[in-house]
Length: 418
Image (cartoon, one colour):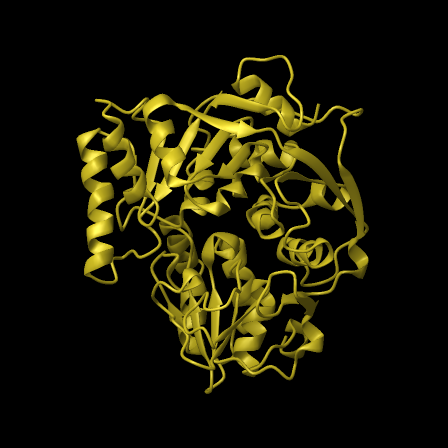
């Protein structure tokens, strides 16, 4: 079996499962945010149960419209707070203690290898970087799981994506996943488990693995996953809140498709409007001016991402025709950036340095685009109207390309400014 099939089998009490089977499986962690949790809470109350299945296994994180941007957002966030108090949930994260959900939970050791995690957010697939099966579900499935501790699944087919060779300068996990989505398309992994493998993956640091698994959904994937190894252990040990189990894929496991990528041929890559699959080398887009640059999100808001952007912009200035918004993904990342002097680098350059929030990624707040404006961002989606006006445009890149673009006022490469 593949690692995905082994985790699912273990969680439904069977020796083995195969692609296409419908199963009911116990979940280790349930996640919802200030947009999706209110729906789940209303459905949970309709079920009529008196208690949640486990007060320590439900994480509610107000991060999308928080800090609360308006009255409606405040009402949404209040529902999470009151529900958490009513059922004495231990994993409610208030503003000031919260962070972007998919960065916060791994950082806090709340997701561990071998877990089965569901979240009412499509980028729940991020946690596959830790060797867990994690996937987004609907709010009604979350409501049912909060009551029962179980969820239904169709066992996905697995595809293997193998990365070999050596990475070029300024190329990381974001470029690898954008290149992959550009190759297979936004439905190229439809309802499949995307298993990332190869010598390059085995040497990738955890933050880059999290970025890759985060965007599995942008290829239509049910999940993204990486077989855990020593890098996983080093990340998890010291932060894991409970015991974990390392699963691997059998050598004779079956995959519906296998693709290989020579990483020495992958340049810093940008996804152009209005699909993540519309990719081109950053060097070919120097004609595109940008009004806004965003560094952050559950894709690229970790301390390593902030450092990479700071390395490019240190001692330089944001272009006078461009605004730059830097959003650390968690309070811990924020504090670390302050301690390392990174916040000062950005503010001195003329950028905004924000409290953790999803904010502009979903067109929520903290950086909405006007008609005709263009942004380059380290976020994960660039659909029509994603960051504001339907006639605005979003380009996706890694932190180094985004920072270089902030200096140039157009899409550029780090080599142009460093």
